[in-house]
Image 1 (cartoon, rainbow, N blue to C red):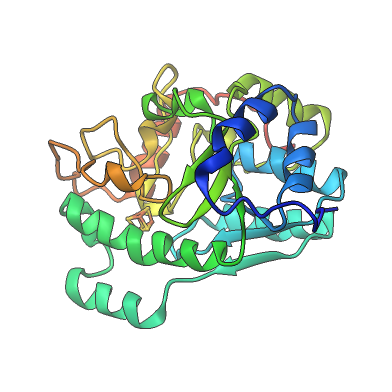
Image 2: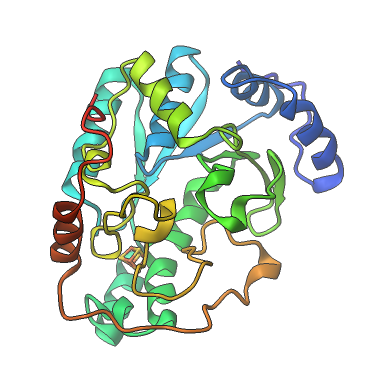
Length: 281
Ligand code: SF4
C-alpha cells in the first residue's frame, strides 16, 4: 500500500535520486517500490504488449494503482475486447477518458473525420483533442504516472531515465519496462498467461488508433506502423513530449494514398508471415 507519510514528490528536486534508486531494482519489484514511495499512482494503458505486462504486475502484486485508458473513439475493436477481458480477468476497474465532446465536434467541423492524413498540424490537432487533453484529466491528482515505454521502441526513447520529471503535468513519470526488450516482454506474457492483443500476431507491434496504425514488416522499427505516412523518426502523439520538445513537427510529410488504413494494414499483414502466431495468449 502507498505510505501516506511519504512526501508526494511534487517537484523535480529528487528526481535523479529516485531514478538512481529505482534503476537498481528488477521488474516487477521496482513497480511495487515506486507505488509504495508515491502517494497516488496512475497507470495509463493502451493495451499494448508492454501495458499488459504492467497490468499483470499490478494485479498480481495487488498494487493500489489507478488504471486509465484514453478512449479516442478511433481504437481497434480488438482493443476494446482486450480491455473488457483484462478488467474482468484481473478484477481491476479501468477508467476510460474520452475526448471533450465540444472539442471533438469542433475538430470534426474544421477538418472532417480523417483530416489527420492531410497535414502534420491536423494530425497533432486530432491527437490533442483525442489523447493529450483527456490524458491531463486522467493524470489529475496523481503524483506518479506509470507508462509502458521501452528504450527499444524509438531513437527518442533510447536515453530516457527510468524516472523523469514531467513538467507539463507536474508529476514524475516511471517507466518500469524501460530496459525490457520485445522478446522479454513476449516471454513474460507467455510465462504468466497474460492476454494480449491478437493484432500483434498480425504484425502490429505498436498499437494505436485504427486509422493511424498499420502492421510493420519484419525488420522495420517497432513504431514504423504509427502515422506511417509521415516521413519522420519523431513520431509521437504528444503524450510523452516534454515542454521543450514542442518543436518536433516532422520536417517532411507525404500524403497517404487513397487506400484506407485498414486496407493498408491488411495488405501489409498479408504480405508477411505472422510475426508470432502464438501471441494471442
Ligand atoms: S492517432 Fe490518429 S485518430 Fe488517434 S488521436 Fe491521433 S490523429 Fe487522431
